Image 1 (cartoon, rainbow, N blue to C red):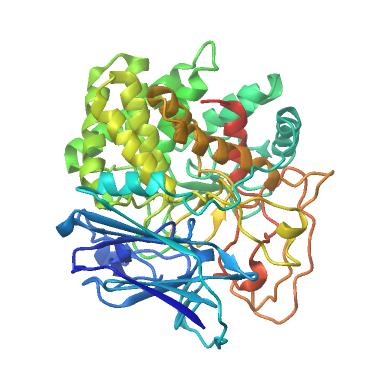
Image 2 (cartoon, rainbow, N blue to C red):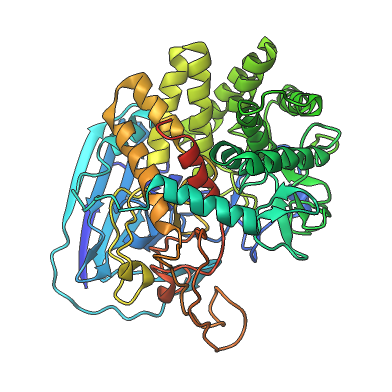
Length: 585
C-alpha cells in the first residue's frame, strides 16, 4: 500500500476540517445511530435541539479520532483544513483514481493521509458505519497531490480559497452532450401528464403512480413546484392543470399558514416524521418556504390570480414572520396547524427570505422585506459563518446538506436584487463558495461494466445531496441554479458562470428516452438497496422522462451500485424542468 502523510502544524481542538460533500467541521456533531429513515426522539422535540447527525464518517466532538473515506465519497478529491488560531488554510488536492481504483483520503489531528488502494478501517455502508475487512495490497505507486496554503482570517476567506482552487488538479471537466431543449421539454411534458397527473384529486404529484403510497409531497421534491415549469413550458392543458394543482395545494394549508407535508393519492394527509412517536402534525419548515417562493413564480404566469391564491400566499408569508418574531429562528419541524416549532436549530427554512422578498414586491408590505433581512442575518451568523447549513431534507436529522445551502444562496441573491445592499451580495458570494463544495467539478471514471460507463455519462456539475445519502445527483433539489447566473451578472466573475453552466448542462443526460434508454442496476435483494433474499433484480429499462437521483461515485450502496441507478422517477426531473423554464437565470 502506498501512503502519503501531510503534516499540518499547530492544529488544536479548533481546526475546521472539510471533506467536500462529505464532512463539514469534521462532522463533529452529536451522532444518533438510527435506522432509515431517521427521526428525533421525543426528548429532542424542543426549540434548542442540539445539532444531530446520523452514523456517518466523523471525528469525535472534541476533534479526536479519524476519518477515512475514498475519493468517491467526496465531490472534489481534496481535504481542506482551516486553523482560525493561525489564520491559515491548507488544501490537499489529489486525483480521483489510479489504475481504475479510488484513492483514500484520511484525517486525524494535524495529519492528512492519502492512501492507495484506499484504506478504511471502518466503512460507511448505508445507513451506518461498519468494520471493514478489506485486504490492502502492497502496491508501489506515486500518488499525485498538491498542497496549497494561504492566510485566511475568516471562514468566508477559507471558502473563497477553496472555491478558487477547486479545479487545481486539471481533471477532465468536459460537458456532456444532451438532447436539444425542445426534445427535453417534449419528453417531460408527455411523461408528467401521463404519469404524474392525478385526475381525481387534481394535482401534479411527486410520485408516478401513488396507490396507497405518497403521491403528493409539498415543496421539497416537487409538490407545488413542478406545476410552475409545466405551466410555463406547456400549453392550455398544462396551464389548467397547474391552476388545479394550486387549488389542491391550498386545501393543505393549516390554520397557521404553513402547509401539511404529504398526501396519498386519495388525499389522506401524511405528516413528516415517518410515523414516529409524537410527530402528528409535523411539517418540515422547508416545505412551506419552497411553496412561498414558487407561488410568486406561478403568479407571474397568471393573468387574473384567484383571491384564494392571493390570500393563501399572504397567510404563508405571515406564518414565517410569526415564526421568526416568536422564536428568533424558523426551526426544522413545525406543527402545520398551530405554527409551533417542534424541532428547532436548523437551516431548513433558508428559502424563506427569498419568498418574503417576493411577498414584499407583490404586496408592497415592507415588513416582509425587513423580516427577510433579519432572517438572512440570522442564517449568516448561525450557519454560514460556521461553514455549513443543515435541515434541507426531512430524513437526515440535521446532517449538513447541499439543499439548504443552495436555498440560502437563492435568498441572498433575491435580497441583493431587491435592496442593492452590498451586504447581501457579499453573503451571496460566501454562500456560493459553500455551495461549490457540494458540486462535482470533474468527470468521475465509472467502472467497467457499469451503465454510466456504457453511456459515457459525465459527473461534472452533479450535486452531492448531503453527508448521509452519499450520492451525487443531477441538479439541485429543487432549484434551477439561476441564482448563480444572476450572481455572475451582478459581479462579472466568470467562475459563477462556469459553475452555473456545469450545473445546468449535465442534468439532461440522465433522462431516459426511447432513443437512449437507461437501464437499472443489477444488485442482490439482500443488499442495502433492496429486500431480504439472494435473488438478483434484473435490469429494467427506465421509461422515457425518468431521471433517477443517483449518481453513485461512492460504494455506500455496495460497489455494484457505482455508476448505476434504480428504476425510479425522482425530483431531478423537476430540477431539469426548472432549468428549461428559466434558462440563463
